[in-house]
Length: 76
Image 1 (cartoon, rainbow, N blue to C red):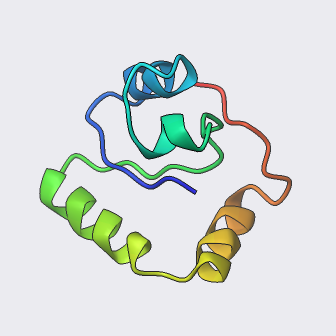
Image 2 (cartoon, rainbow, N blue to C red):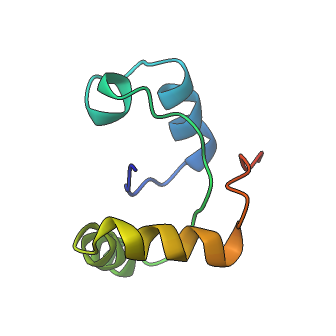
């Protein structure tokens, strides 16, 4: 599961799907958007990213499933 912050979600999805950026998503072939949160405050976004990254996988899964129980890909 990849967790990150961006100011342009559509661009970021394109980069991941087309493996344009080296790193976790390219290495593990992660390209399906199943959950996202939005805010206009970059500091709260970074704080939330750090919080989520500190969670165990089970808790992250529960968060996704609370909004997207079938893990369907979200199309923007």
